[in-house]
Length: 576
Image (cartoon, rainbow, N blue to C red; front, side):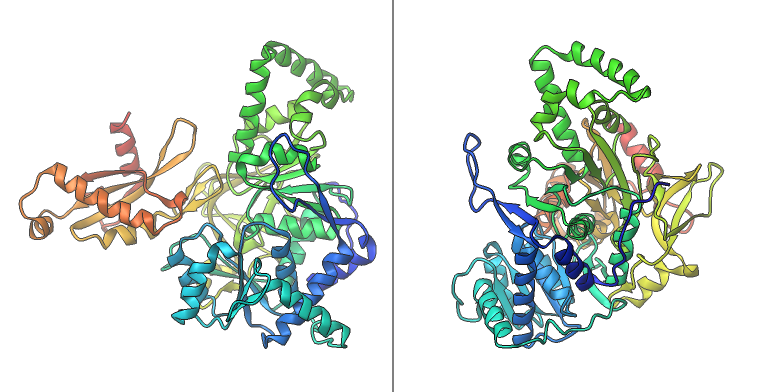
């Protein structure tokens, strides 16, 4: 495997300091101060690494002045923005524990996770002001300091981020070195990330700076990035996959810009002209469909098909003309994209092949939050259709309890594997049974390449990279009066995604006690209303799209466990 030159880092403060020494005057961020219309030329501002480091120092010093001590937690919830990264690095390089929260969470989950994280401070954008005030006024958590990105002045107990930066600057100028002199302990918990799940069973993953640094160096030994690269961020920053790429961008002294929203992707690509994009397959499919639609609209479908064949032949004799031949396609996505890194969900191999035929390389990655997160990734030299690439150098992977096809659970061991689950020793012990981390994913290894075949624990994986755990929804549905049992499953859609659906078995006697004599239609309406109530408490990607209501019991084993695969086959067979 080809290696690329990497410098050693011991912790995130070391990473930042080295980057500033090497690339201090280079642009770290490119951003707009306001939204522009499609036909306007935006004014792009830049922030150098020296300026970035100055603001990290200022906010880190300000956090200390608020009495936030070492190892205490700082929660963070916001859309992707420059200030998010300042808080992230200030916290972890000041020996605090950062707790990034999913910006799409409904209020009840924000309240729950804020409490479960045992955070002392929370930094947020004004969009969340109402729920943050509820947490503060009703004392629903241990949070004592509330900091808003968007306030010019403090509003009572809600502090202004901008004023705190100014305070930190004054303290530094007066000689306060409490933050600057903080000694790093890279093996301690530094990041607390909640897995996908409802408030009752989601787990909080404890990651150390040693975990993160190991994953950075591993990835850079396989994928080639340079300080001339620029990245447009499309995934939310709380997502472990996007977070590790952000760290890599800082490590290599490249620049980062922010997408204004999924509907602005093509516009932003043309504005910022990135060289690297990190996304999930769903976004790639959207970009690809737009490209193919434009080709068809211009009547060039047959021509493009012929030219693909020609350039593929030329590739084999090392004549690289794809970028020149398909220059219009490259211009449509900014003109400079050389690499797209895809993760968080499985990708159709034909999609990667199509982009490759246009001269755009796609590298797939695989991992979990618990592994910081990448376990395997493709590169220019090692890629196989259908695989997720080769395992990172510092990790060991083995397949447990293989079946006759060599498929079994993927187990992993190495320096980027998490410390454990916060306040959940039972789940930690289960995850590390036998000394290996159990991913819960099924797969196999062939000629050194890792292939993923499914989820051991029935997780529904949607094309946007979101994971839905059926068991968590089943717990909530089970609380509905009159429900005897239920099974949540993913139903394939016409565009190869999965809709979350549920089969509900009702208890006739219980229903009669609740509602009296009613028809099957009335029972269905009642259950539908209850499911709608549950949906309102969940983020959109977890919404249950359809229900089946029956009094026929689910197929079970002799030990009363539901045979999910048989039930799903039965359901899908009757719905054809």
